[in-house]
Length: 117
Image 1: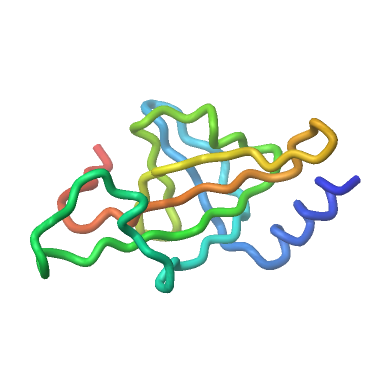
Image 2: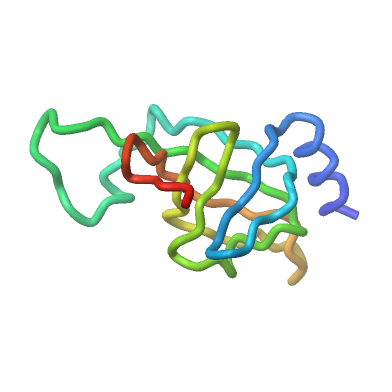
């Protein structure tokens, strides 16, 4: 019951997303993706870059229970329109042992880092 309510809210407020993982591509579905512009991004990167080199953009992903992002490979790419994102962290949110939705941290891929071929 709770997972259906949350999925309906994600369907009403989310944006269309699809996932590419190797040769597999998901059907388009709705998920909520919001920019983490106020969060400390250093917790997501193991290495420090030179000051001023580039701005790394991270996003919070909240997706429905029926799209398990915890099972994806490290090469999975999330597509929102023409913009590609890589998954940096994934977790299942559970209530009474049942997954009700998934959360994750997405990193925006810039320029030549992503090749659709």
